[in-house]
Image (cartoon, rainbow, N blue to C red; front, side, top):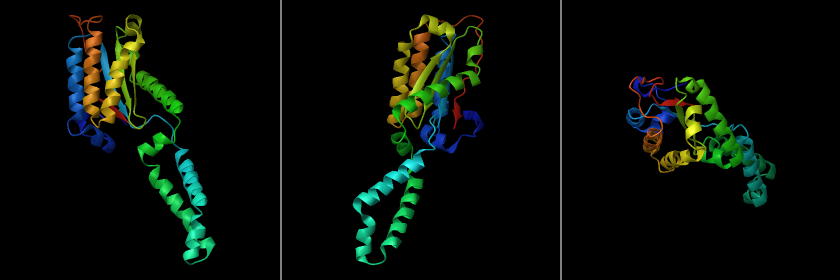
Length: 224
């Protein structure tokens, strides 16, 4: 599912993290940045990139381990009631807690290896780059600014013409701006600053042309 801010069909979680005017601020930054460069900047926000199917089982296992290490059923049985009943109750409570905890991004992030997060975020960014047809601009000047919210990770991908002139390390600053925005609770501000910085980096090498046309829409793309 794709959200374009002006349609009003925002995903609920995106509305929470972006705020009432977050998408508008980001899109305004894109329009301003592209006024001085032929680069085509597309901001993308996704809820998560990593697979988290393992998280409920890991959470449940860890909770059961805590139950057994603390010998909680035996302690509760000492207060009254059969041991088996308290053991069953502990299992049930552990299952319910695991289901509740695994809904939290912080728990998903904590129980997913960092290397897996990094690899899956980069792969998702590449998929979005091609799905949005960013490699089909006339001058091969597409730039994807990608944020994966759960992992607190960001990626910048530039098309061939830009990659030939600008070193990949130069995009670390926009990446840092986006991540800082996520961690400080101002995702829209971080993405807007990153877009502005991309425009500044692009304009000396890819100035706006007289016959320039806006090949990719300036809308913020939001997906699950």
